[in-house]
Length: 249
Image (cartoon, rainbow, N blue to C red; front, side, top):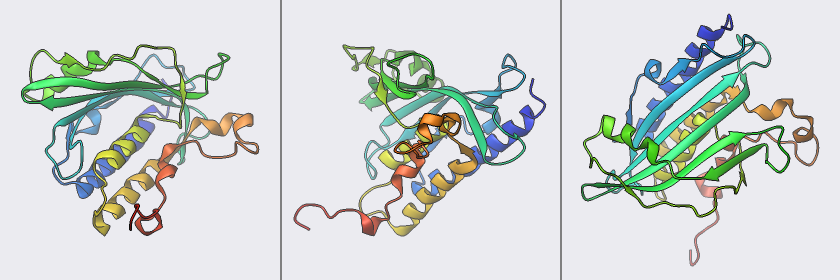
């Protein structure tokens, strides 16, 4: 195991605890289970000696499908994240690799319906594979995670069946932390939200800056015109007053 493994785990858990607080500031009734970082981020003892790999989750987020409405949506996130480039005792850490699975379940009546599934990946070798990409797929295998933490129907319904499974959608680096920022943006930030919500969302994005994406080591992504961060946390930088006005306003 890498000599800095426990130090990296401590930094990741610290960031997670602060991120949970920011989520509560955005939407007080948001529920995340399990809550403790040590139950979520576990060191992978089989990782190469020059790499720190953390197995993550499953984490279940109970959030409103639309802010202000009932908490009928359960989002399950599972994956892993590894670091190994540069000094692992200095921030920001640098991503070596990642893999993220996400499943959305909607509670309708007493029945849990699987309505969306995707996984995000990094591939630097295979031709035709975007370095950062997502693939839609059923993630019914994550339904037991909802049942483990919440009282819901024992037999979930499959409502999401992509007909093509080999479509790789180019994405930002959607590691687990980036995915949590997306969940906040989609379900906790809403039109008409007060300044405290926007400040908490900015805080969540700032917390995520404790590590960099994997693009730092890829020359072709660090030259014009591709020079950019490639982490989605930077895609929500508009202040409310900078957003375009809705039609008729």
